[in-house]
Length: 382
Ligand SMILES: Nc1nc2c(ncn2[C@@H]2O[C@H](COP(=O)(O)OP(=O)(O)OP(=O)(O)O)[C@@H](O)[C@H]2O)c(=O)[nH]1
Image (tube, rainbow, N blue to C red; front, side, top):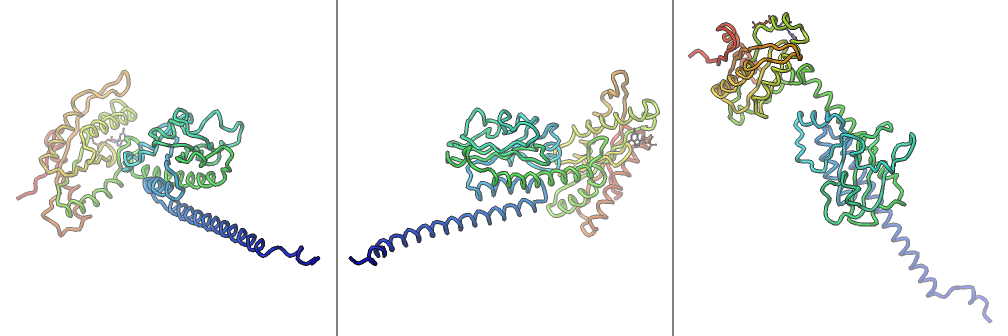
């Protein structure tokens, strides 16, 4: 009997084993390549969101890229916004929420996509919840779910163990998110998203505070000076009219003397609100300091600006202002209106802005001089 033959495997066996190893290797290689490509895509995504400079940019990047790089069928983002500050400030900074139907806001932690019953007890931060999609339980996270949603991951967005929102991922594959799966990857992704969100929100809030008047909530002089330059350049390019209005409360010193400084502050707030009610969304209102307000009107010639000014004057004078339950006061205001002269194109924009402000101021002076509680339009001497 030939002993060597029993020890040496058949050639066919070796070939089969070799083939199996090769295909196993090819599979592992393919997996490694796939994982590498996923990792690269996620790294690119991380870079994109880290470099987003504004809230709008960050949110658009998340909604545009995350479904693609993670092969998801649904992505929604819920932000905890108890006093609606985020919505209010972002709205004022020009974020159009209609563009982001998957951006949701919750006024309490219960309104997030996180199942409170499942939240980890004690000081430990809540963990992501991966499970089958349930239209009832997940209605908060997916208010308008796509047809065929099967499994979801509700991932808390945490900053220093504080919940700031929830990232909600959905798939039409029932095995994509299951309770037994490891959650490190989604947790890591959510932590980067949470940092980015907190950064842009704080930056936008700071930006907003620097451009608004803390007493009345309307814009301040810094904002208006900047805006005026932008709008004059645009109005010149696109050939439309812009008008500028100065509004000064009459005898405001007397108001303060009669009802006190705090009462005066209340009057300023109410006057700001009455002016705002008469404006279009495209117009902007700022407090230039003291009892002076200014309005920049887009697409308005001198006559239409004077018409709006008259409405503002009437609304301020129309009814008493409730300073407190027992104190009411009646105030009037004088208004000066001027329109940008678009025929003069050789003046630098900054000089044109100063000129426009000065013209409205001169008209206001005439309104004061003429007896107050009136509107005067600036008409250049011909
Ligand atoms: N309550 C309050 N008063 C302010 C504020 N800023 C300025 N004032 C007051 O506004 C008053 C402005 O008075 P004046 O500039 O003399 O003008 P006026 O009394 O309104 O008289 P005319 O403008 O000529 O009608 C001053 O008494 C300031 O102290 C503020 O933030 N709050």
